[in-house]
Image 1 (cartoon, rainbow, N blue to C red):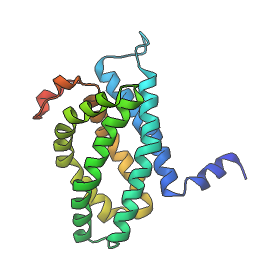
Image 2 (cartoon, one colour):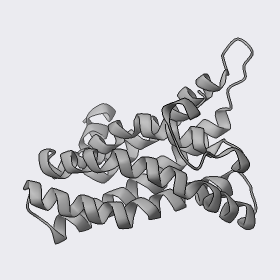
Image 3 (spheres, rainbow, N blue to C red):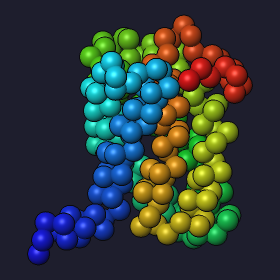
Length: 191
C-alpha cells in the first residue's frame, strides 16, 4: 500500500480529517489576516510563528474539542431534522461557543508566552465582543451543519466555514485589549 493511500485511509476518520483540515485552515487564516495587516513577502514581514501557533492550536485543540462536541450532540439528539438542528444549535451557542472562545484567547495567549494573568485579561477584554459577532453568524452555519451535512463530514464542513471566522479571530487576537470595540459595525473593522 502506498504512503498516499495509507494517509487517505487514515483520513477517513472524522477526527483526523478535522485535525488535518484545521491544521491547514487555521494557519492560512492567520496568514490572510497578516496580509490584511500589511505584511508581505517582499520585506519578509510575515510572522510564521504566529501561523504555526494557529496551526497547532487549530489542529490539536479545536478539532478534537469540536469533534467531541459534535459527537455528544449527535448522541443526545440523533435526529437530523430541522427541530433537532435548532436544538443542537441553541445548546452549542450557549455551551460550546463560549467555551471555545475563552479557550482560544486563553490558549493562544499562553502559546505566545504570556503570563496567566495576561491571558485572563485578554479573555475578559475580548470574549463578549467576539461572542456577539459569533452568535450572529454561527447559528445559521450550525443549523445547516446539523441538518444538512452527514455526521462524518461535519467537522471538515465547519473547518471550511471557519476560514473567514478564523481570519476574524486572528484580527481580534492581535488587537490591543484597549482597542477592542465593544460594539461592531462593518466600518469598525480595519483590515
